[in-house]
Image 1 (cartoon, rainbow, N blue to C red):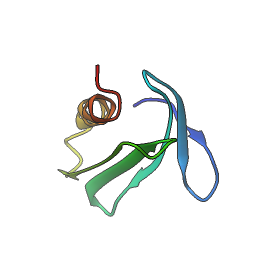
Image 2: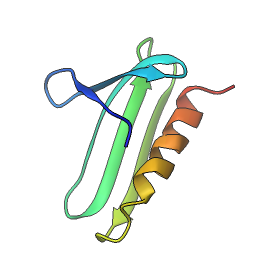
Image 3: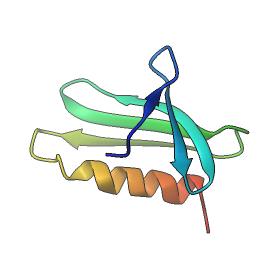
Image 4: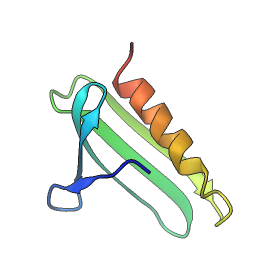
Length: 74
């Protein structure tokens, strides 16, 4: 998982993405995961949801890679 810095009110700030700082939140009830982030200027947003039954620990890197691809297109 990409290290995050808390920014208050459970908002995460990730200053080292390829397109600069992004902010958002993640979490979910047992069995589900959600991450939702946006660029600081609000020009791009992405939300990802997936089921997580305790065997999907390796899904986090893929989810964050999808998030970065959506927020920071080449």
